[in-house]
Length: 339
Image (cartoon, rainbow, N blue to C red; front, top):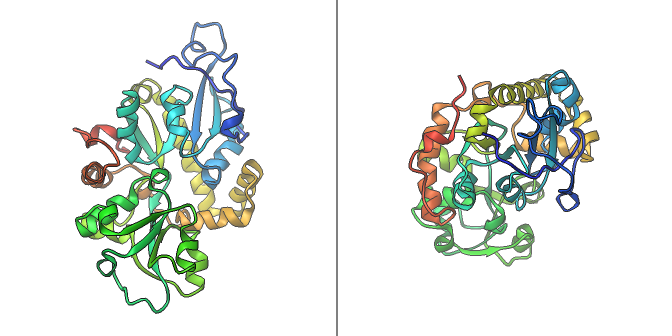
């Protein structure tokens, strides 16, 4: 059953700053359903970043994808700190987030969720860089070293999980950690021995000769045999997924089509995505490279048994690292395998 919720009305092609959202005068999806007298059902889909070209394209082409349906679709762009609370409050039917947040949603809001389509994978994900001339050549050489990183509270757990998988120690214990929004400046200013950041922030440092000695992708592949760990993707309340299967399949189909279009004609997707998001085309091109969107295989656009097996091993690492209070008892129940 769809939860009763306040509804944030945002038309499909619009990006919205969360601070400007209004909650007045909206009915719930269930109120708008069959026989309610309030018009068609409205589904609200949220994302925590404004620059995923595939998602932006789906928003820009919403009329083409959903215009002939017997429901309405609205999109919201929030940020990493507000999307989960918005979902927990019932303002979103679907959101894009990393599986690591699913236990948090359960803990904070007592909502069972299902992940049903991947939109990103860690390839390579966050990376540790050291300055030219550093004697460190592996993560083992950095035990006890000063390492700058973005505030872990703003991240999705990849750094904690990868360090724990590679060293057996929590990241806070293994490094002298400096959490800052200006991590790259810490190392360029000589105040850190290494920096743990993600592309595109790595690009200028690599251009200056900084050296990669560790990345999340390699750590996970070595630990779990998974070369492309699934991270950001669509999740919804489990009951919503089962009770709104037609919409879920339509959303997956639209996103697949957008992704296929990107792989055959990236400029066409980026043009629309830039108009929708206001992000310059060259930045969207870089995001596409960072997310490896052009090279993503058909299998990697699905939720597979490998993904479930990997996350079954990752959830205990999240719990050990303190990112979540405890690992889910039945991790497989959190994912809808693509058939």
